[in-house]
Image (cartoon, rainbow, N blue to C red):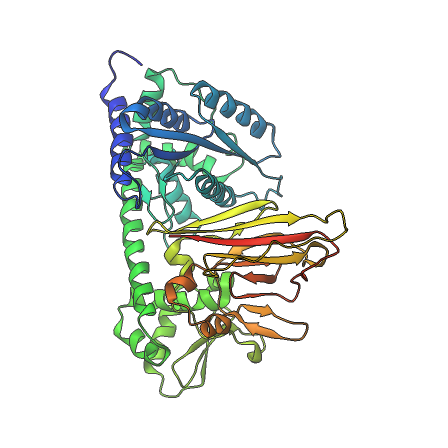
Length: 497
């Protein structure tokens, strides 16, 4: 370390220290004196090395325990060069490293958004496996400005501004460099002689045009503070968006179907269209992205002035909205059969509230879901092989609370095609409980009288498009007999308070 640091370099170090101190104060269940366990997303760029170096210097002072995670996106020579660089970097700082390799994808699908989704899921997986408190990434204020500008130019901000935030407690994701100017990060790197490789995945992306041409032009011709200004605007908008969506979820959760039209009438326009979007995305899934917020505002006006129930409102996005006599709203595609209308909207908006994404379940492997109150659940998959007598036998069932520990078995040769995925419940979910019988998942849960909290924390396991198992509740018709003639897939569920 240099004997003296510039003010810019000191500012970067203090930004990281302050971010860690604030974030660790919000971690539930962390014991006094316990090391702060961090998973750092490590790449070959300058900001990443700066973050790793600062964490190394703060390890003893803040009692840090650091591990790294890196995603090799494959398909390019740079991806392998970057992986070797990251391996050398983590060896230099004595940091354990987990690497995830992604198969090459067509260029049209290999977007910046897709890569970030892969990295985020891998970070969450590594954090759960290590029992870490936080995930850290190295984006700085320039990255946030670029991200915000790209969102605006792509017209993707019509419904929701999704930009980088310094700390996301739901995802347990911290970006300690986000408040640091890019020039200060560069100054720190220069003073400490840190090696790095410029990002190689920007060669043909719009992000490269923004970084190398558009932002320099705006700095030169409009304002030298354009990056700082864009970053500040993005931060403020993200905060406003978070508040509005949270308020919309709370209003929807506390309202029954019969009161929905009057709820819409009582809300301001920013909340009106968000409540309608929550209902639409729960019933239509990804198709709800077709609905522009202006379309939903016009729908809100029609709902407030509607005099007759059973009316279809034709939206300008190929979507129909049907208002029933009991106040229930049903969205469906205009060319879809009316008999296949989805069930009434769910009232807890699980995915938005908990920020949980579907997780790939490897065999063998474990998926862990952690919640803000410190509780967690895990689902493990393993293979029970055929024994010497040619039979695979499940483990003996255990007593006690069926939701604390539950198991299910499936014949490997009868599983539906497709990867195993752990996800939260969705409206319209159905389980094939017998050769000819199908049950709604919601009905199965209601019959057990589960509390809303437990329902939210009881994910499903599916293979391809078929639900296999609801832990402690029911298994699909493909469940294996007690003595199977082929290897068995064992799924087990645990809950930790």
